[in-house]
Amino acid sequence: MVWDGVEVVSGGKAICSSCDRVVPLWEVFDGECTYLIKECKHENLIWKTLLHKGRWFPAPIKIERAPFYNVDIGEVFDGSLDKVKGLEKVTTFVLRITNQCNTRCSVCLDRENEWGGEVRVEDLEASPLFYKRQIALTGGEPTTRSDLPEMIRLLKKRKNWVSICSNGLKLKDMDYVKKLKENGLDSVLLSFNGFREYTYEKMGGRKEELALKMKALENLGKLNIATILQVTLSEGINREEIPSLVKFALEGNFKEIS
Image (tube, rainbow, N blue to C red; front, side, top):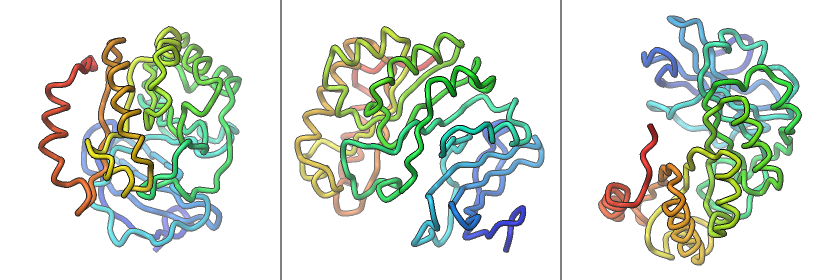
């Protein structure tokens, strides 16, 4: 099977980011990179997300109700997004700004991704795409970018809502978190997989990560920064922690996103 001239590896369904209808989702390989393609014919919109540089292997057997995908700039910005039809209607961008990370989690989708591109500050400033949108800066780990505060400041200057998808390790530093907030950071999507050091060791990290993440959450709470917990569940590792995680999210000192 092919989609728009490229090989379809697998397919499933997703939710349109514009009209909330159930729409087709394909994993495609163009000979160089593997992408996720979501297409809504009702809205005449297409979302394209870089999954892996090269063929993603092993390919998922089936994609069931895949998560929320928007437009992901997965390479050095070259204006190619301007060619995606209906892009002016997209309100949310997932912007991969680096492939560098300060940990090596075995459960991470990007742990073997060889893409090494860097989105530059001047790329954001020059593009008409990033104005009055919701922008999620991700990676890799976005806090590995020394110019992250500058990128946030520029995006806020252009009236965007700005969030970062982070493992939270660097957010243990209150001065650093203050700097991000002073430059306009609106929210943080923080990966948090449980309350046991064992969980982080088994998932390929370090047991010390739990204490660092708890300190990060404390700092985010003190500064009243909207926070969403992103949890990866694994049978035999942290599934039994679901009740504790739900209770923590409900009772924690988190600012709601309006």
